[in-house]
Length: 271
Ligand SMILES: NC(=O)c1ccc[n+]([C@@H]2O[C@H](COP(=O)([O-])OP(=O)(O)OC[C@H]3O[C@@H](n4cnc5c(N)ncnc54)[C@H](OP(=O)(O)O)[C@@H]3O)[C@@H](O)[C@H]2O)c1
Image (cartoon, rainbow, N blue to C red; front, side):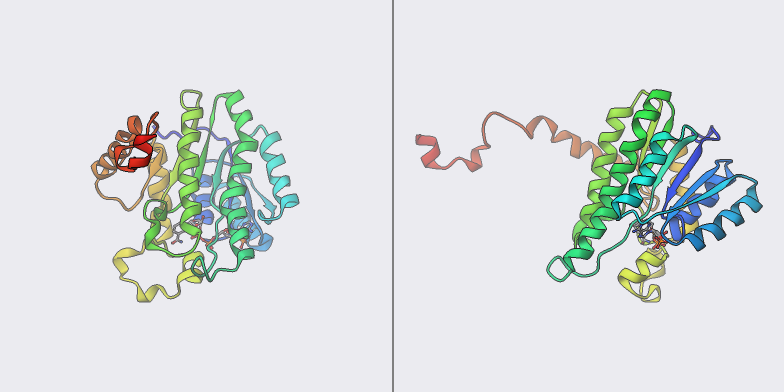
């Protein structure tokens, strides 16, 4: 049975295009009323009208620049106070162009505001209410670059790594209390963000690029299956389980009262 069975309202950030717009469509199809957040109010309004016509669920526009503290605060307040909102999809994201050395510091800071600060503050605003009612979910859209930052440039992969780590901790804190957490790790997905950041899709092998609809449908199937981390492209779940097992096997050896022998100099040994 799908875990998204309740008709709770879903707040989707970055709903004006790409992955977020498709989440809005699919969640409305499942009966969830929506609050749609992004900067381009005209696009959100057109989507809201289309969704209301198509599925007969209410879709409200809450235009906000999530890098602007006062505008972000309005979204936080809504999440804090609106008892109907039970699902948050932290999807809005951007890529600051260039390598670590080349990137504009202001653009990198805006990216961190959007990809890191906003999802953290939005989830934090909503969590006490979800825990009190014992129901709800938070979906964080990260990227496979959380696992392989070496494959890209700049600070974007680090923002994905943050979202993955955040979601793991969130899961630990809410597990058994009726609240769900999911990190979604898309690979290359045909959308405006990728085209802006990386240029022409036609130069990529088609086998590397997923369509947005397929990505979102797979991510929601992962949510329904109770996954904490969903990597829509990964064919063999056993590969992920081996990765997780190897990671967790480090646990007993990562904090000890002495440094490992290979770090002990003769001087330290003699002291
Ligand atoms: N496409 C890929 O290959 C890929 C791969 C891995 C992960 N992802 C992740 O998937 C998520 C969705 O990206 P996408 O591919 O669907 O890109 P997209 O089509 O460019 O959508 C980005 C969304 O974020 C919104 N947004 C951007 N800046 C904002 C701001 N300052 N305040 C509020 N909203 C803002 C945009 O709306 P407005 O411009 O109207 O504000 C838009 O709705 C992102 O988190 C991205 O990192 C994408």
